[in-house]
Structures are given as C-alpha cells and as structure tokens.
Length: 168
Image 1 (cartoon, rainbow, N blue to C red):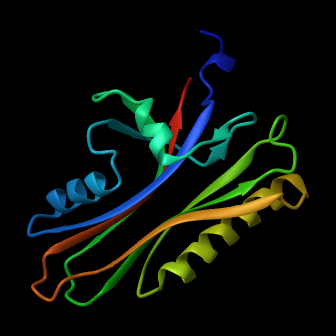
Image 2 (cartoon, rainbow, N blue to C red):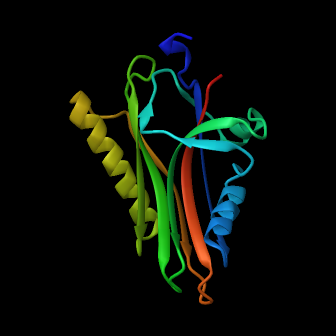
C-alpha cells in the first residue's frame, strides 16, 4: 500500500460525558453519549489532511461498522472530585486551500473552565500551531467541546471530545 493511500478522506466531530462509580465505566458512558462506543479507537496526532472533507456526526456514524478500527484525535479527562468541572476540547485550524494544504487539530482538557473558555483555547492552540508552520492565517477555526460537573456523590465522571477520521 502506497503511503498516499492511507490518508483520511472524511472527518466528523463528536463529544460526550458520562458518570459511574467506576472510572473505566464512566469513560464507556462518555463514548456511548458520543456514539463511538462500538469501535476500536486508535488515537492519532493532530493533522487535518488535504482534501479531508468535514461531515456531520450522523453521516459519519452511518459509514462505520461495529468493531472497526477507527482513527481519532481525542481529548479525554476524568475526575471523581465532587463538584469539580471538567472539560475536554478539540480545536481545529482549517487552511484557506484545503485541497492542497493541511490543517491542525489541538487536544485540550482542563479543570474549572467553561465549555466556551476551553473551546476558544483549543482553537487558539490549533491556530498557533498552524501559523507557526505555515506563516499563514487559517481560513477558519472551530472546536468540539464537552463539559461536565462531577456529581456530589463523587462518582467518576469523564468528558471526551473527538475528531473521528474515515478512510473512505
């Protein structure tokens, strides 16, 4: 297989949060809310390939088969500190010419920041990475962000935000 053949053609965004007395189960609950619980997720670094089309979550999920190996840029945070706010975000910098230029994703997770604060920060990171390598301003930045407050009973809570790649 040539190296140019294993490049994602589509990407969609999703997020979710979940709580449970068990940490791993809270992660599973977050994956279920994000509708990506039945895939084998492989975490990848943060490049938006040229010609990778952004599609809706609903369209993307329809193209996946349970058990598939799925590449994803994912931000994840878990806590059982009662009353604590946790937030996970993936920001993206989209180049002006997405047919020939590549963009950036930036994963960010934090305690005690709002969804809006974390989303803006992840976009800023993606923007900074893009401009530092290209000396260009991206056409657009965007983010997918999830925030939750750990319940008073101290159940584990997990937030995830993800960019999910489709190869075809």
